Length: 180
Image (tube, rainbow, N blue to C red; front, side, top):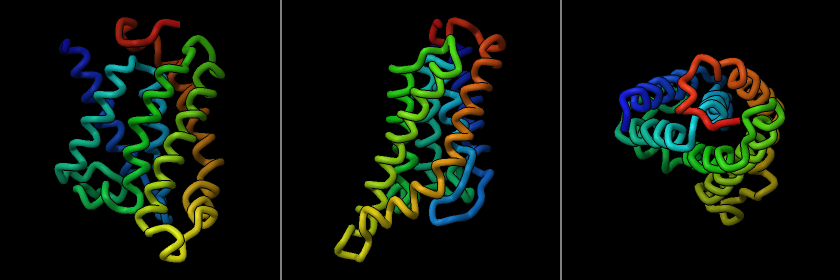
């Protein structure tokens, strides 16, 4: 791995951590994590984006307070919101395969699909964490708690990430970007 790749991964990981600390408390906190995930996916290659997500996950898993609420450790990943964090990895995979970085919509539409993937992983995880209907938690209730309140804010964060990515492309090394 090249030194510049490692530097971008480090910067992206720091961005993820900082954005996860910016939080509005709720059942599933409002954070800027989704903004950071999709900015990174929109701006960089699959290799850099995936390494950034994996380093972020590993730091949090090892106990570094990388996640929302300045929390870390395996208990966060195994808790009810852990699926959303793991969903970031799969979101990046989908965005990387679908994005067309030459237009705002070529980034925004894949980001929306990636967000759906993250919601899917996170909501399923949340449902299973509460043992589903055996514990009185229905799929509809999970969607009411974990998806519906976040659709508009997350969509706005995706628009911002797509827009910022287009503006920041000229400042990053073209060899670490997907070509338009």
